[in-house]
Structures are given as structure tokens and as C-alpha cells.
Length: 294
Image (cartoon, rainbow, N blue to C red):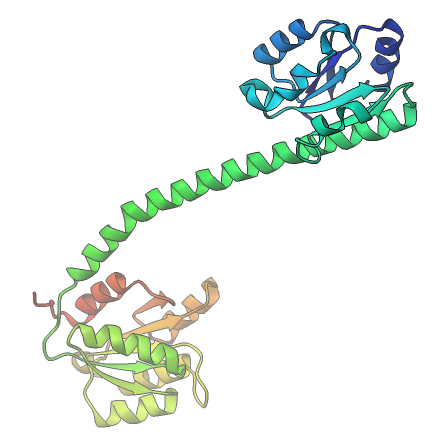
């Protein structure tokens, strides 16, 4: 736990001795002085969290130091506990400060009240410091994200603009999810690819028997018949290597067992969903042996 510096400004020996005992904590470093001038010097040179100040010192008769706390830069963030025998005369002075920053203790001092109030102030200061640290960290993370976005977004956009279109290419997409169907078809169509959709493995087999495709994008899990079974059947029916249709298996799983099963069933490659358009484009070029056009 970080040490917290507390300044005790008091000139009465009996009060100093009592407060030394009452304010003692493992995480508190107590700095003592009997002079207001010395106290101001300490505050200007060191990081003081809380000041416990006796208002009945000779130098405090007009409360001028208290009244000017908000105008002194190195006192603005400090918390104060004032010791007094009569609060009435200084009530208006205390009212100008926010709750939790300034409070008072009546003399003669009650040890239980002193302990309770001091512990409360320690908790408030600690909470304030934690919130400031979290705010600073949040600001740092936000700045890093902004810088990362500024670096990456233009690059990604420029790369995607350079992806070329195809000519005379027909791809069968086996996918049962309507949203995924829409997204995949939108991407492929933007590359000038003719796209057919099959909702399940049986529809894939029917379309393959009726049409000629340059590539199949095969989802793993579909109703009626899944992608693994449909791929195995297609491979068993294609004895001619010339007419062999490249199949890319699409899966949302990161399990190595599923990737292995997809390849074992006859898929040429496995892509994880959601896929990167640039990677998909490069695989289409690879397996169809048809280069894109500008």
C-alpha cells in the first residue's frame, strides 16, 4: 500500500502528543510543525495528502490562511481537518469548501471521533487517487486506440480497394444462415463473381450435379446434411482430377480436430469465420487459377 503523507500543524505539546498517537497508521507518514509559515513551505515542496491544522494557533487568528487555500496552487488538491474549540465563528469559512475536502474536530479531542474522521479522510483521499489513476489510464488507452485506428484503418481501406475483380467465375456457397449468405454473396459479387446459394448439403449435391462451378465454399454445420458429408460424397463422385472442384471449408470453430476432419473429408483448405476478405480473395485466385482483373 502506498504511503500517504499527513501534515500536523499544532503548537500545543499535549495536543501534538495525543494526535501523534491517534494519527499513527502503517501507511501514514506524519510530518509535524508548529509554524504556519513552515507548514506552507512543506506543502509547497512535498506531496501532502491531508493537513491537520489547529485554528487556535497565534498565526491563525484571522483565518487568512484558510480563506486563501483555494487560491494557492499547491493547496488546491489537499484535504484539511481543522481543530477548534468554537466552530461558530468560522462556519462561513468552512462552507466555501466541497464536502469531503475540509472538516473540523472539536477540542478537547475525543479519540474515537478523531480516529473515525481521520480514517474517513484517508479513505476519501485514497479513492480520489484511484479514480484519478483510472481516469489517466483510460485516457492513455483511448489515445493508443485512436493512434492505432489512425494507422490501421486507412491501410485496410486501401488494401481492400486494390482487390481485383474476376471474369467468368462461378462459386457455390453452402451456408444455412441467411445473414452469412447475404454477407458472403455481397463480398463475392463485388468481385464480379457469379454466386449460387445452397442451404444444406443435399442442395449442394443437387446443384453440383446440374451446374459447373469453379469453387465451393462449404459451411461445416448445416441442417439435413452437413459440410463434411457433402464434401466426402462430392469427392467420391469425382474420379477425374480435371473436373475436380476445389472446396474451401468455412468454420466458426478454432478446434484443430474440426480442421483436420474438414481436410480428411476432402476439403482443400479451411478458413475460419468471420474471414478476412483479402485472404478469401487470395484463396480464390489460388484454387481457381484465375487471376483477378484490375
